[in-house]
Image 1 (cartoon, rainbow, N blue to C red):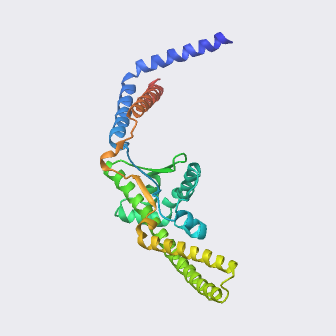
Image 2: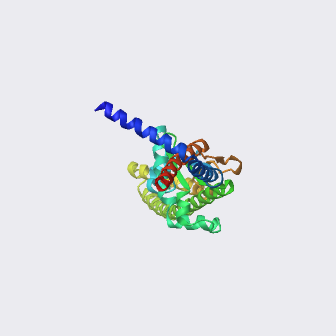
Image 3: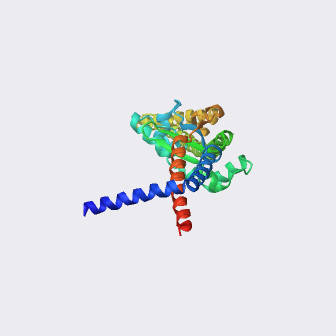
Amino acid sequence: MDNKIHSIDEINLKTLLRVLIKRKLAFFIAFVIVFIIGITYTFLVSPEYSSVSQLTLSNVEIYYNDEFYNYLPDEADSLWIIPRIEHDKVIDYIVGKLDPIDSELKSDTLISNAINLLSGELSRSQLIKSMNITIDRWNGIVMLTTYAKIPEIAYEINKALLDSYTDLKVKEREEAYNSVIKKINSEIIISEKLLSNLSNDLEKNKEDILLSRKLEEEYNKYSVLTSIQNNLLDNKEYFINRIQINKPPDINSVVNTSNYLRNILLSFIASVIIGIITAFTVNHFKTP
């Protein structure tokens, strides 16, 4: 049976060579046409350029972090203030805040804003297909890569998406900031009233050690709250600009990511296959 299979393979190979020699003109014409189309596509249509940017969460030291989390933990977290914790947990905190970036960049709001910044040059689906988002969970860094057939477009897409995302985060943090200011103002007013009441009570009971201790504790709380309030008011830009751009998109850093060797090889293989099919087709119809 092995001899029979070998014989069939040999016959098929002989037939293939005979047909190709007999119909070499048809093979050559088909090969050249397909190869030229493939090469044209490779160098004129398929070239792809990429632009890269990187971002993370700002980790600049800020006053009263510990006290902020002690008295107003939810409010501190809403401002994306990184708490004083172990390094590994800091990275987890950063990643947790930036993790939704993939879905956020593809949301209707951000896509529409980016399209406007690009003057409507791309559709929603084209914009989504042009981006790739990866998160380095070991270092807490997000990398945004955008692709286009023209270097300038790859850069402009990256910049538009990055600007749209940072603008969104600034708006969100500003809303949180205003909410925290209201909250802390309310807490300070409550603390002032409590201090006044405790002071009056202590005037009547000067020997009351427990009351004196409560007054001291409340005064310490009041001092911390006013310090946090002053820090918030003096550093608003820091509190609302929590996104740190490690690497902004740069037109001079756009790279050609096309795989020319692979495309040429695929064009050659396709040309050979189409050439063989054409030769056999011509041979079939011209053979009596």
